[in-house]
Image 1 (cartoon, rainbow over the protein chains, first blue to last red):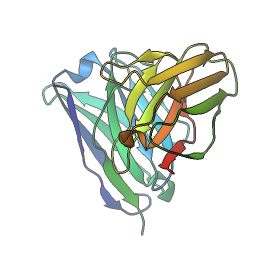
Image 2: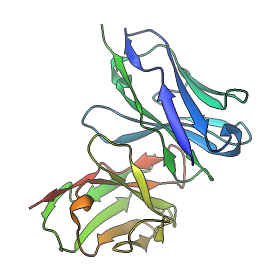
Image 3: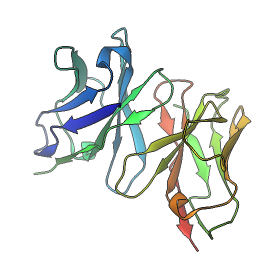
Length: 117
Length: 107
């Protein structure tokens, strides 16, 4: 069974850094296109970033230059490193796995990031 | 960026009703469109991809249609578990973008 578990969220001050983890089971993170989607409180869905199976990455303009993606094959985990955090980054962050780059099949439960002083 | 506009933003309906939600793209997205369902406090769930392909396990009362810039999600006979928020999403170009959501409420 495919499962994704996000951890690492919490309260962080503006300008701070946070690393989110997405632990996968039932498949290897290198075999799927892995995406982060976020949802601000009471708002809609916003695509954040994707890492291709081959390692290429793409980011939304709103996070480009501040967020990075990486994978740890030994831990079968995807990481989202978030730097220079802003209030507008406050959201539930979902990790998603898919067999292609287009659609978002398997979602984690999400982890809440709150950026506030 | 491709803008996705859903209508209506909310709709009230009764169990057994037929409901249609519309999604319009700001430019041609071919068939790269998906629909998601999100229940309160839960992660979204992929229902339909490539406009009309139903994900395995999704009830057949859900259907999708359209092409180019105009798309629809239809629920043929609403069930209690269908009351949720629905999002469309385009996958033609980056950034991937979602519609603002349509909240389906019980009348």
